[in-house]
Image 1: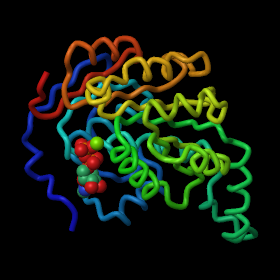
Image 2 (image 1 turned 180 degrees about the vertical axis):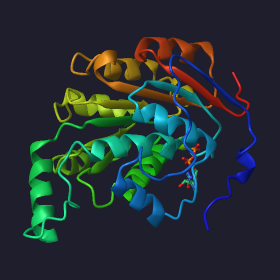
Image 3 (image 1 turned 90 degrees about the vertical axis):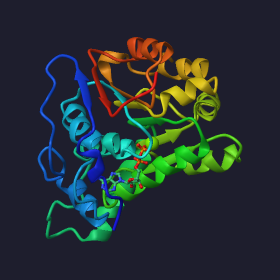
Image 4 (image 1 turned 30 degrees about the horizontal axis):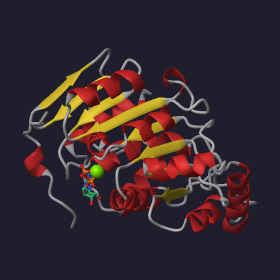
Length: 263
Ligand code: ADP
Ligand code: MG
């Protein structure tokens, strides 16, 4: 089952930056959290794709990353796995083997914790509703049995329904830039707790004219500065406007390119 990524094994890797960590070869912990490794097993993923082998230890060590790879290379999980793994350890665990505590009690505790924390700690920006939904579904699959509640917001649909859903709390928010700005202006989302910021398909977001919207979010006074958050950018191409954005948003970043990329 699943996709055969073996043909990716011989593709060229280009990597640069200070103190680049060694790639991993398996999804076994460490460096990944045990609960995440269980969820990866449930999804029947046998081994990491090339971009995942390199990105997992880089992100796990807290480094900023600019990654270029083509569609279908496993980019979404390349950032979701290490980010979720780190985020799992920030909250309460439901796997703590406490004999006096049944599952229902544990879930109750977690939902109370969620309600108090309505500011997301993970923000993922994506260009379209379809992409945002794909990332959201992947995040939901791999945050199974964790304290992380993913939410997704995008334009073209009822904003009040999205606001109601956000009121239940969200630690991981997937958003298109326009709708996120709208929700921020309405005071429904605060970025002050963001620890992890991911720009997926950055080149496509710029092609669609989202640069100003993106800058309004990333340079917002609520958003922690580059040295106080971890920032990852993913793109299929690396033209000068993406290089400029990387220079502005990332701090001491590692550049990773998998396969031949366009520019
Ligand atoms: P990209 O963002 O590079 O276009 P995706 O992250 O959407 O690629 O991955 C493409 C598909 O491959 C998804 O359905 C995803 O669930 C699956 N996938 C990702 N990583 C693995 C893996 N290590 N093993 C098996 N399937 C994987
Ligand atoms: Mg993708």
